[in-house]
Amino acid sequence: MRYEATLREAYARTARAMAGWLQQRPPGLVFSIDIGGSTFDSILSSAATFSGNEFVPAWSLLRHHALMVDRGQSINASDMSAVFGKYDGHMLTDKESDYWTNGGVYQTRSIGSWLEGRARANVLHLGDPELLFDHLEGAAPALETQRPILTLYPAGQDRTKLQSLLSWFKYTVVDLSLRPVGKATANSPADFGWIALPNEQEGSAGLSLASDVESDGFDGLAWNRLDYGEALPRQRRSSAVFNIGVSELPRLARTFSASEVLCSSGSYPVEGDGETFWRWLGPGASSQIALPCSLPGSYQVEIAGIGASAAERLALCRVLVEGREVRTSTSRVTEGKLEFIVHLDWAKYTGHIEVTLISFGCRPPTESDPRTLRLCVESVAVSPC
Image (cartoon, rainbow, N blue to C red; front, top):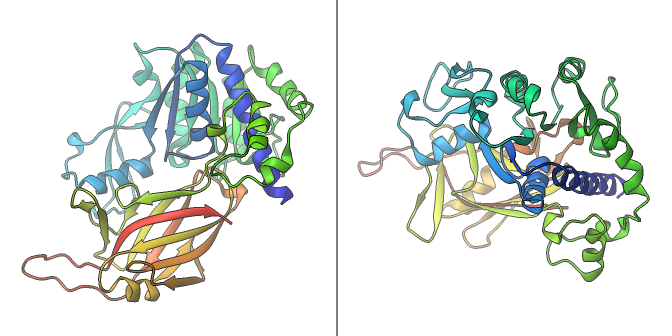
């Protein structure tokens, strides 16, 4: 319970601080490169609205690839929307994809060149761990002239190298509790997210905000009881302490329709009849999906399938979370549901949980549909537990 309370308090401190920092600056851009719905992406979208800034979401490399599969785009690099990288140009990846046996080809833009001619960037959220250092180097012109606040997730990164680079840009790094980040390994749950503040403006103010928030009478009990649905009056009063609205509390319970589920490999494009959407997994037995989560913690996941054989296929599924198999259970609600518990460790948090579904058996190709179809997914629900 204390672990969860620490994360929620850190979320609230950062939400309050971001809204305050943005109000001190002339309105501009809050730019977020993210899978969508992670801690910083959620905080910044609300803080931007609160402070009169424009919130601009951009795809991470993972989301870019997943949406490309969603839309069934043709295999032509010149036709694809750009992802952000170190330079303006093209990027080759060494990972095999559903479309390229030798990796992917992506058109890229640097953050610095993209910002030319646009409003001042007040915050840059660099939430794509695969390209974090590329994004920092590509943003160098903006970091030197516009001095935006930076947010990022350090999991899997060389912390010493990352801190050295931010120090070279003259930034002070604090965690989600607004305390200075040490150079050793992470030792606090609030360290899963970093905020880099320009030394000349927010550095000293950011370090003093932690004690200010602690003295404001944070109602930890209300947050511990929060069900993330309809807020109670006491919960509204608690959120008012932080000068934020109820909608800015972390949204942990979500349901993703088939059109929203981010399948990064092993799936066919989304189909629908105008009202209902579904997605077939295949042709291979292994399919990877990414589930955005607003905070680290434990979650129950429910995958709803449709079709006459959905319940049987779900019962045969094996599920791997971050590479490790987890225990599953099934039920015959509608056509069938597959349920399992996942734990997103704060030390490994990058905004989402990676889930691999291994499905056995398939519907053989026919003359009318030559595809190898395995499991038909209607939706995925995620809720804290």
